Image (cartoon, rainbow, N blue to C red; front, side):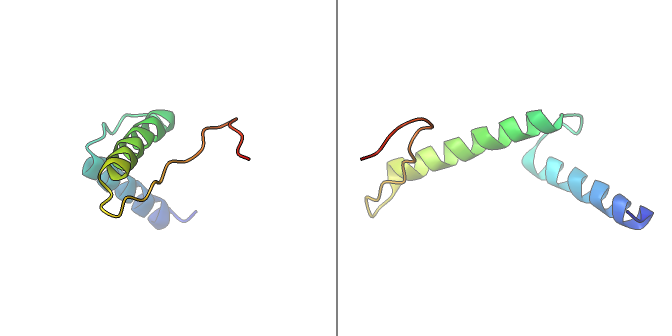
Length: 66
């Protein structure tokens, strides 16, 4: 990767981390875990407050549907 592009990626990563309020020293697995927590919180809120009454529940891994 050209040095200019690598620098741009690092700057973008830093900006995104700051936008989410993440510590710049977090590992990738810590970042993914935090993003999933945020996603779960948002989707739980959506399921509870959807004005049309739609259910967006997703099946759990290993569950069977007939």
